[in-house]
Length: 428
Ligand SMILES: Nc1ncnc2c1ncn2[C@@H]1O[C@H](COP(=O)(O)OP(=O)(O)O)[C@@H](O)[C@H]1O
Ligand SMILES: [Mg+2]
Image (cartoon, rainbow, N blue to C red; front, side, top):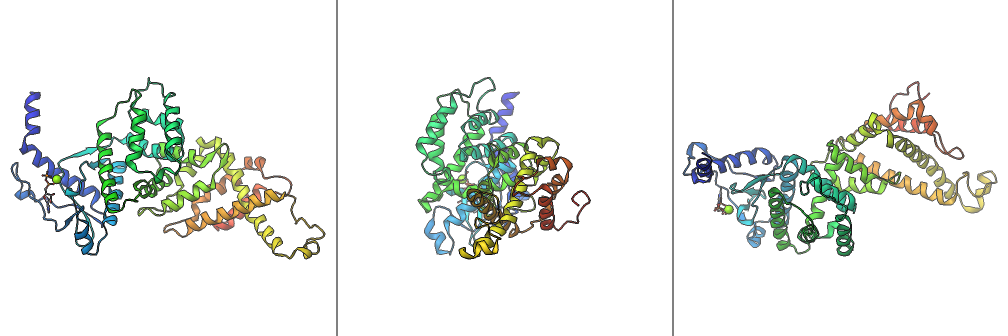
């Protein structure tokens, strides 16, 4: 019985019908993007012996000259291929496992056409998130977290101890990476990681080998068109977007790990994520940070909640004092004592070093605000929950620095002004 099923499966008859169905499923998922084309299957003319589909006018992707003669750039098409592949692998999980140049055409209007749906594969749902998390951990050089990812990726069974892998990963990355991860070739990275991992009892799932193959093929095409092309750098906007906007708990935790370190909020990380994420075609500022704010300020976020309150107060200080410091500094030296009532060091009881750090924070926050505001769909009310938390009685005990600092009330007012929300009695 089993043998018969195997026979039917492997017969051409089954394969062609299956390929037609693959094409249809693939088209449904990915061809809504204006730059991807998938031929229609003509079912009325398709049988177990013939697969009939729409003819695609186009040039194979490795025929660089012919493509450029049409005024198109191979790299644009490769980039479309990378963006589409990331969504295949990491979003819907259904992917074309054979994207070599014979199966990819550039159409005269610049679309990337996918052909040949004979070899398809699926990324299990858990692995999709684990892969994104793994990339984040890698960029962050968090080797402990990387090692733990191999459980979620199903590379290791839960009874294998990952601790010996941590130094091996560290050795590889600290040796091989003087530059940032995104500057590396995908293939170099995969080969290097492979060399580390093969020393341990890893079991590489079949889907994973196919993912590597499909990405390596795309990278090969890109490098053929431009030897300096960086696939990882081209992918990072997508990863940044997913991190900023995806409510999946695994990704949310990865984002929190990225943004908070040793009880500090890392503004430069947030800025970098926003700069990168905004480059992704599907970035929506309305959704950015939403999942993380929900968690931090919700009942499960107790641990970091105080930190968020403190940081909000510090930002308010930076904004308010920053403006004051700026106007103080704009007064010519000799006049300062006169203008500021005999206090030549300025109207503040904070050290020069701290003034400096407040000014830096202010500049960074203004930049981040600008990044959000200049995005389509941005709604300042995203930060409304922070205002609510600031106004709760327990926030008062956290407060700001007493001397020269401002309180949570003033911070709440400032935030309120920014959000243009009606004042509530709690803040009054
Ligand atoms: N719908 C189509 N429109 C235009 N050319 C096609 C189409 N389908 C296939 N081809 C051409 O035929 C070649 C082989 O088809 P493909 O489906 O890739 O079969 P194989 O399984 O043999 O690789 C492709 O590389 C492409 O050049
Ligand atoms: Mg083919």
